[in-house]
Figure 1 (tube, rainbow, N blue to C red):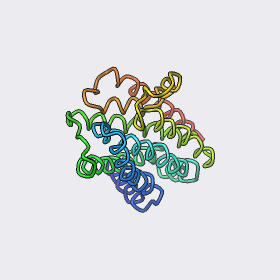
Figure 2 (cartoon, helix red, strand yellow; figure 1 turned 90 degrees about the horizontal axis):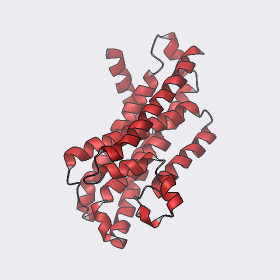
Figure 3 (cartoon, helix red, strand yellow; figure 1 turned 60 degrees about the vertical axis):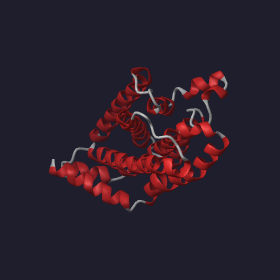
Figure 4 (tube, rainbow, N blue to C red; figure 1 turned 90 degrees about the vertical axis):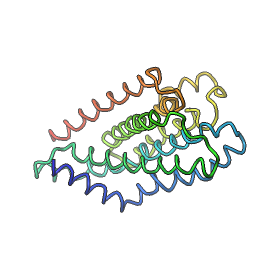
Length: 238
């Protein structure tokens, strides 16, 4: 247990020095929030009631799909995994510590959005805060699990960037955070349901925490856990 806590603390310190994580978990999402928050509420004042959820989807998607995978690829695609094996460290330790560290960083960024949105843009706070934060945590865990699959399965950085964008962009454009999904053609609305952002967004809305919006996220999470387990088992066997 002490070794695990040490690993988590060490990863936290490494992440604090990481320019990539700083950009993807803090700088870009928060700049997007500061710029687009004013635009959204000016053009569509009714978005004030969902601005927090919309900006959080953007923040989590960027951190999970663009920020986390490169770190995993760098670790599990190099000799670092051999160090784990040589010292008797479970090969899953790197994944777990990076996952937890990314979760904490994204939660901090989301908390900043929740605190600043009502002050800067007169956005409405979620009316059910005791349910909002569990919904946020669930959506974040599912998104990070998908990012973990990307980081473990795609070894080439160029291909990883392309794969991450193929998940990130539809998550932003088709989830309903930029404009209501009713404005989309039916086939694009259906495609948007493939990505967890649509379900996470609904889950975080007022009165949205229900099994109807939760089941798909649960399915995606367990599927991602199975894939990660298989990949790590193969890594251990090499």
